[in-house]
Image (cartoon, rainbow, N blue to C red; front, side, top):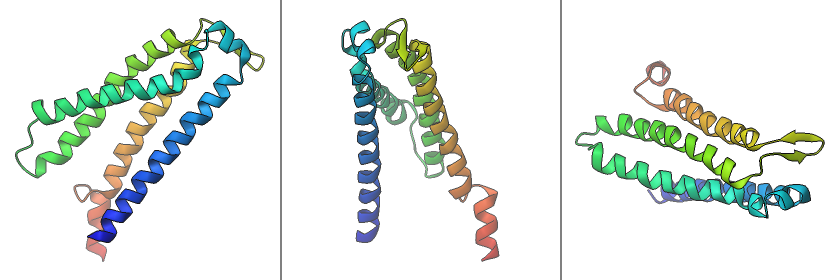
Length: 157
């Protein structure tokens, strides 16, 4: 039990560390673009943190749905409820990210020699968001006993 707790806490700490480092790296990159800073009055530097803050709010709302609207009365309901929470949070966060991009970034800005806009930034974050959903589902299929790949390996052993 103790080893499992340590492993889970360690993975959580690693995940948070990677997340915090990538957020800081994005802020450093944003701050190095002086044209973007001038055009957005400095708000663009905080775009990665705005994404995080809005993601936390969507997560709280999704948790409320999972605990108050989707009651789990049996063990077999846990898996489907968690999947629905993953889908709900992804669907809800998508338009929120679009709003954040349009409110935080100027209409046009330059990245290197390329002219970009909020839609480009939203596209990047939306691809990451939906990739996370797809990875979550693939991981579920490959690790859950509810699906054939895991049962086949278990039977062969």
